[in-house]
Amino acid sequence: LYNRRPRLVSNTNIMMVGGIGWGKTNTAMALAVRNLPFGRRVVVPGDPKDDWLRLALALGGQGIRLGRGLPTRLNPLDGGVKPAAKDQKMWETEVWSRRQKLLVALVATASPAIAPLDPLAVAALDVALAAAVAAVGIPTLPDVAHHLANPDPVQARAAGHDAELLRHHGQPVYAVLSSLINGHLGGLFDGPSTVRFDPQAPMIALGSAAL
Image (cartoon, rainbow, N blue to C red; front, side, top):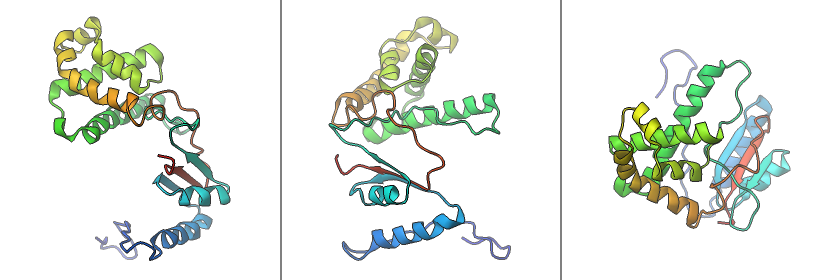
């Protein structure tokens, strides 16, 4: 776990284990807050009790509440903010890779029975993503689902595939995306984002207590 060079640690993960009410959350919060003065930023991607969300707001950070009936919507396929020093072409390649991996991970997580995806299913997803980007710029899950169900023959052929074959192999993926769009998470991740992450915030927390 430790680098052989003096005072350099190669693995700085922490795992906290304990019973309910033993102070795990408070301990983690104390560690986080004590690191803020040293320039470290804290991101909490899932906060089922909104504890971290309240702390983030108290510290002047960003708290984002997610849940049915709330106005907040996050598009998981947003490109994000390009670092000023990053080359545009490299950034576009990075965004594409992130979107492609995220879609595969979403489908595999939502439906483990079809994971790992077969190569033609991945190809169908790639062609659908490329078509959605070409059509709207910043795609959403419904955009990708639409092109999965209706692959463009020209784009499919350009990628070296038959459109009907891609449509057939993309059906299970389309079914999973449709469940995310229309199921119990409907209205949360199926459209353009209504909020943007503040990269300068000392702490960002996504509260999911309303779910």
